[in-house]
Amino acid sequence: MTKKKYDVSDHGKNHELTLEIDAEKKTVKSGAVYNFGDNSSLTLDLAPGKLNGTFVHAGEEHSLKLVLDSSGKYSGTFRDSSRESLELEIQAGVVRIAAGKFPPEGKLKLKGKTHQLELRLDKKGRLSGKIKSRLNRSAVFVLDIRNNRISGQLTHKGKKHQTILELSNRGWKGKLTFKKGKSNISLNITGGKDMRLSTAKINALIKF
Image (cartoon, rainbow, N blue to C red; front, side):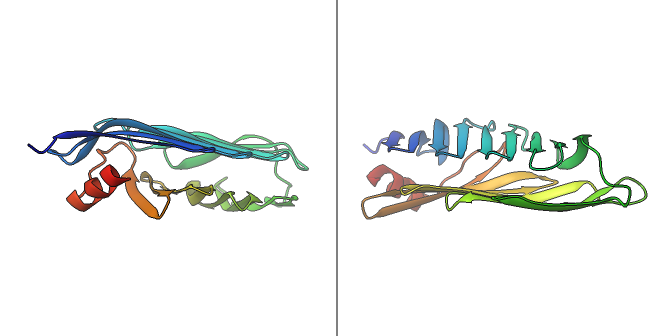
């Protein structure tokens, strides 16, 4: 008789993966993903309809911390201390200035060793611009801001795993990739939604 539930796990120097798969419903019943490195980390807790987690990316002069909510939304804080004290608060796809002052002309341009930003405020106080960070080959992000609305992509990469998260004003989603020997498994995720798997993906994970 074919099993209806499977437990999948994999542990490496910089990642941990545990999944309980319901093969009958083709969903991940529960589990956790933990990817970590010198400058960034990602934690995901998986449960039916409650996919959530945290993302941290931190350097000497700047940091980005996000809470990936089970509602599918996200919130967090970006801080820059390279030249000016700047703090941006992110909530449900909307960004606002929580601390720091802009020059009178409403434009702020900073370039540090590992990141750069170019932001501007219009006459109505709406923020637009771009923030880029590359701490190393493993920790990269780009944030685009238009009229206080934020979108972007975050990457955390290791020898045996890679996580790519995409942000928009609608919420968050991404892709998890794990390597084990010659096997390579990729899983698509959408914040707050059930993690559904095809039969082929379930079979690949069981062999993984």
